[in-house]
Length: 469
Image 1 (cartoon, rainbow, N blue to C red):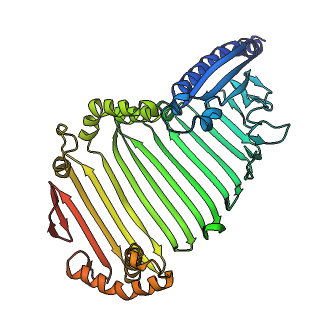
Image 2: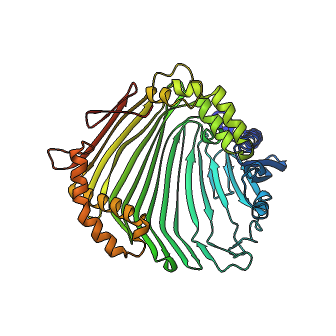
Image 3: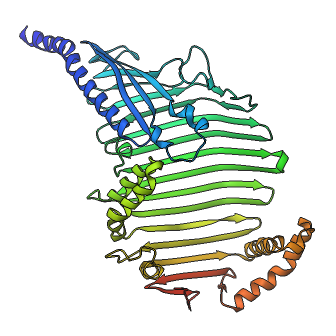
């Protein structure tokens, strides 16, 4: 009998006493989150009220935009006035575990939901009367893991000041998980459309996926973190008939990765941009890709710059302070900006290239700071560009055409006439550049340009290149 009574008593004790401890932990977590959000650049967050019972908790949180974001921006005060007072009240409801029914029957430490007030932004947005502009539901499992889902409904933007623009948003659906070791989130939008006088825009199927190692609040606090995120858009259509301008982009993709050093003092960031195809009146391209790296970002410099960016009115003084106290450690970390790959097809031609650039061996800042000779001596550059013949001819034609268009004597020429003249001159121009050593022809018949610089010595295609400083 004792073997039966003890487990039953333990379950009862957990069910009765457990919610109280859970409630205390929830309040502490809510305080920490609001404090972090309030300290994040651009936001103001406060807990307006709170109520804690044995089996449940509730709170009202107000989140607004920090007016300092607009101070000194140069924008018309009348235009930014509505945004300075823009805020939302978030209603938070929490059920304490271990027995949960708030979002469906389950076991866990807590179940919760947070939703903005039903009147939020209705002066700007039209959405269903029985819906809220944003809501999120979630739960905390018995071992502390968090799972959640968030929703934004379909809405349209209400034209202001007699405007005739029509903007629609199909809604947002997302879901995620979080723990003390990692976090992940994904979400999607089906359609966004904009229609105004002489302009139309349509974006179809945007999907976001992201994951982060460690504390999920690290980005909000300006800390370094390991992460991976992807943004994919099926298509974008843009049309301005009055200006005879239109563009269609398909299969857009952005991939971002961050990796911090073992001692958390530095972080690398890789960003890849890709477009499957783009069609415009004066330009067409396929399989376009640019891969970039920003390496050896120094923690104090990165955080100070983020904080300065959120306060435009104090930007000048903030930048001066950063230069005085944070710039040297950043330069001593040998920062790099690299384009490890850029390639694609434009018109009928192909191109590929890279640019690797870093600042190295900086022990002290020059006086004056703008001393060009100093910076040239510390810069290390390795770059290369390859164009097949079709691409070289296309680039050359654009260059010659721009030169002709800038000549006042060509003011009466049509685009067709300018293009014809450019086509006649381009091969001679490329041959001249080849003879001068500005470009070379490699074994594959590609036109190639290589530029390197180290210790203040520049080389173009293997030949010394004089610098102006």
